[in-house]
Every structure is written in structure tokens, then in C-alpha cells.
Amino acid sequence: MTDLKAIDHYLQQTQPKHLEQLKSLLRIPSVSADPAYRDSVSAAAKSVLDTLAAAGLKTELIPTDGPPLVYAESPPVAGKPVALVYGHYDVQPPDPLDLWTTPPFEPTERDGNLYARGATDDKGQVLTHVHSVAAWKEAGQTLPMQVKFLIEGEEEVGSEQFEHYLARPEAADKLAADVIVISDSSQYAKGQPAITYGLRGIAYFEVHFSGPKQDLHSGSFGGAVNNPAIALSKFLAKIIDDQGRIKLPGFYDDVEPLDESERAMWAKLNFSDAAFAKQLGVSGLIGEAGYSTLERRWARPTFDIHGLWSGYQGEGGKTIIPAKASAKISFRLVPNQSPKRVAEQLREYVASNTPEGIRIEVVDLHGGPGVVVNPHSPYIAAAQHAIAAAFGKQAVLIREGGSIPIVANMVEKLGADVLLLGWGLDDDGAHSPNEKFCIQDYFHGIRASGHLWHELSQVQA
Ligand code: BES
Ligand code: ZN
Image 1 (cartoon, helix red, strand yellow):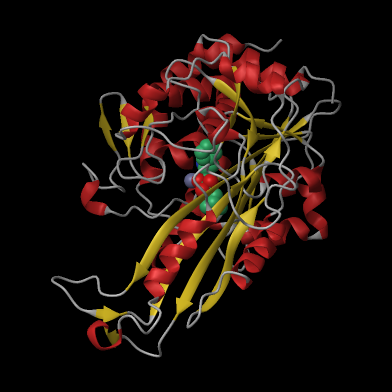
Image 2: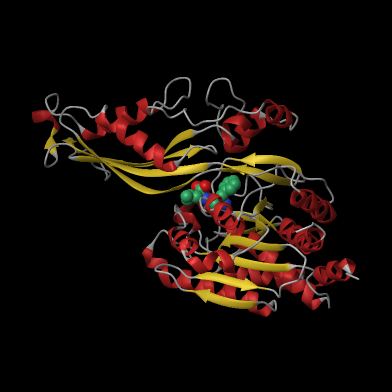
């Protein structure tokens, strides 16, 4: 007989220890985007591996041409489904540093939250599953199903190495699972847990505009020579029209219209535009005409500029026509849109929108398609029970606008269901200064995960 009470009791006792373990992982600055942090990225992998080994799992560090993959598994249990926990130990760059109240890699408790880069995205959420597996063992219980872990170090930069690994013949066997469990997203709101059944995809690019062979005096040459910064500004501004529609040729061909029953379900969530705008410090919201804010964020494609540079950035004025101008841009995609097709559409758009005197280069950075999973799967029903037991509240079904680029690929290779159980909150500041994770939600997540293994083991594999 499984004794879930014994596990809950053990988890109650070990909260201080679990908080310390998270802090020690957060002290490792595992920024995948910047090669200067390479050693720290490896150190984070090692730390996660050690924690998995201490939880009683068989572990393996899988080397790649980039950060290693951390793999672990508990013993197989015949006749029961297999779960694969996917997550990432890498984090986004901490800049701008001066906006952090306490340093990003010195985890600090404040008003019930733990502040540090990676707290919610994704170290804190990953550890919930590691600790829950340890708890089964420590409380003298046998895990009722096999649980595998694959924690990677490049999610924040597009999962290139994990993608290579997935293409290897041995990957399908090693990672074989009935359900992929991912905690790398958010609850609907504070006190309202959610199960996410859809994520958007992404196609990310750099565009480089070149004009004259070197910077020019704008007095002598202005008016006669096309300024790359102006050309880039116009080019970017025209990608999206006043109705919030993206103007790449054929862009909407693969976009599936929203399902009316989904729209009705989301309308019941009582989302407040005013409260949302206030939370973000903006005077109002914008977006594609004909769609609500949740629809725009969760299920409609969007275009964004992430970085923009050209010309003189120093003190005082400098009157030049810069030789170059560049931008980092991305399109969030809905399921059924392909990042590759969007890249082709962008190149077509460039071909017919290149002004006189300018050369445009497009560089593909990374991408991945979106996913929508069956919201009525038995695994989701099982997760509902686990979440209700830990959070004291039934989860609502939502989609989210962020991307976990490798998920669609995993689903295709492994033929598994997906459970997106986000323990974070919208205002956690992922990718921003002062990222945090609510400490109670960390503990709730661990407990929900502990119950999850019991609930999932009851599903017919
Ligand atoms: N944790 C996020 C994904 C996410 C964000 C899911 C918000 C649900 C809501 C993940 O770590 C992430 O940030 N992914 C990147 C992927 C990109 C760098 C290719 C993203 O969405 O920008
Ligand atoms: Zn992220």
C-alpha cells in the first residue's frame, strides 16, 4: 500500500533542506547564451546530476558538442506507464544588472519569494520533480512507475544539442516514455493553478542592413544616401500593420482559426486587461484586431523586436549616416505553422522590400514549432488530482504564449503525451531583472509532483 501521507510528512520536514538545495543550484551562473559562462554551465549540469543520484536514481552525463545532457532513471515497473521529466538547467543572461535589487546569482528571500536568475525558469521548477522522487525513497515508499529525467543546458538558446541527440538511434529507446512531464511555465494566477495544453512556437532571426562602405558625414551626404538605420526602422515597422497583422507573404496560410469552444473556455477565466496593464506598468494594451488579450498571447502569431542597434551610442551627438544597422527579431507561431516556412516567407519579404542602396542579410538563429495537446487525456485528469491535493484547488486549463522549442520534436520522436505543469507565476520576472519563485509554490510543486507519480501510475499505459 502506498502511503502518500508518509511522503507528505517527509516533505513537510525537509522544506528547509529543499530550499537550501535550490539556493545552491541558483548560485551557479549557468548562462547558456554567453560562452564566458561555459564552466558554470557544466557545473550546473554536475550539480543537477549529483542531486538526481542522491535521490537514488541511476544517472548519466551525456556529452554533446555543447553543454551536457543530464539523464537519470528510476527502475522500470512492469505494466505501468513511464514518465520522462524534461527541463533545463541553463538560464537567460542576467542583464541589466543594475536593475536587480539583490545580485542575480546570490539567491535572496524576500516577502515569501526567492529572488535569483533561474529561480522560476527553470531551476526551481526542475528541482520540484527531483525532490519528489527522493521523497518517495526517503519515506520508505517504492516509486509506482518508472520516472526518467532529461535536463538540458541549452533550452534558452534553442536546444540545438538536444535536437542532435534526439536524432540519434539510441535516443528513442533511452527516452521512451508514455508521458513527458514539463514544469517550465506558469499557473494562471496566484492561488489558481493551471495545466497548460498549448505553447506557441518561435522563429528567431537577426537582420543586418548595410549601406555605404563606412559611416558618412550626415551633412555632406544626408539626403542622397540611404541611411541603414532609417531603412531598417521602416522595414521593421511595416512587418506589422495597424490591425496587428503580420505582412509576410502567406504568413496566415497555416494559421488555424481559433476554436469557438476554446474561446468560450478562456472567456470564463475573467481576465482583466486593466489589472494586467497595471501589473506591467503600461497605460493600455495593443494587439491583433478581433481577439482578446488571452487569445492574442496564447493562440495568435505575433512579431517582436528584441534588440536594435546602429550608429553612435556614446555621450553627446555625432552626426553620421551609419554604415550598418541590425536587429534581433522573432515571430511567435501557433501550432501548424512551421519555423522553416516562416524563414522562407521572411526571405521573400526581404527580396521584395529591399530599398535602393541597402543590402540585407538574414541570419536564422533558432526556432521550433508550437504544440497543442489533448486537454482530455487521462494524464491530465491524473495531474488534476495531484495538483488539487497539493495546491488545494482544481487547476484550470490554459494555453501559454511562451515556447519550449524542443517539445514538438520530442512528441514526434517518442510518441508520448505531454503534461505542462507550470508552478510559476506571470509576474515572476522570467528573462527580466529580479526573477523570483514563490517559496510556497516551490513546496506545493514538490508535493504535487510526489502525488503525481501515484496518480499517473493508475493510468492504463
Ligand atoms: N520557460 C520558458 C517557456 C515559457 C515561457 C512557457 C512562458 C510558458 C510561458 C522557456 O524557458 C523559454 O523562455 N523559452 C524561450 C525559447 C526561445 C529562447 C527559443 C522563449 O519562449 O522565449
Ligand atoms: Zn526561459
